[in-house]
Length: 423
Image (tube, rainbow, N blue to C red):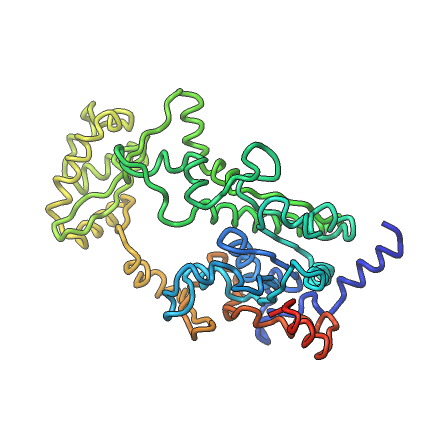
């Protein structure tokens, strides 16, 4: 990079686009990513999940969408107030929406200007699609070595699966997650899109690592994240079991393949309670103080975890025989008093009404195109700060404002709109 090119790169980074959104309320502590601008060419779940985490912590996220409908997750369903998709509501608060037609030269020129003022460019188009549009990592970082480019895909840019379709359920199957989830007779995918979430979290943490390194060395980064790699990492225990025993772990419903008792147990009022004993001391406490069977502590069929796993059906029958005679509240109280790990087997209603969320003031309201909706604070809590909980954008809501930041006047914007370049 020549001295003149380096100066131009620094000039771009001092443009008004950079860090101009998401200011904390006056008097509030500065959020960790305040001043960082992310341009996201994203859709569906994995990439929007990553960028929402960045927005939560103060980054300005400019979401680039298609002019003809935008991110297709907007229309997965209309369950949120009869007009907004649940996935989109979950993943896209605190972002700015710019709608561009990237098939047009003018649309690509606008995206290039956006990226020139950004710290991070993140995309999850099909492998190779961004490069064909002129936004490959090598090309972008040749122009600006400080830029952090994050490419997300199902299987990566090389290998026999490069162009294979990679939806969440398909990757859960391909990476083996479904093989360890479900009943002995019936495999099941995880109910939440875990392949998307896993990839999104690695994209988030990878971006943070790259920002830290850039702060030390001045060097940007080219980062590749795949859904398959993310789920493969999460399969570590099952993988090592298979690798070194020759036998994949069995599907065990709610129970644990190598720990017992570890399952849901019935109560007299029909609500199951989950009990998880981690070691022999925990078993001794459960047996003596809750089951009132101190003889089980030393019985060779049950005294050790290995013995309990071999005799899992007997163990579960003994535990259930006692818990089924107690009401849920009584059982939870006795387990808590004894210090035995436990949980209620909640559904969505149980989560929404959970007293822990209410007591810790975890609920907020955010704006959206369909009105105010409830949302949970993000899991990362910095003392003295309030995460960004800004509105969910309508398609192209911020297009005109961002174009003006990039130097387009009203006449130019009107011409772009007439040509269908922006929406």
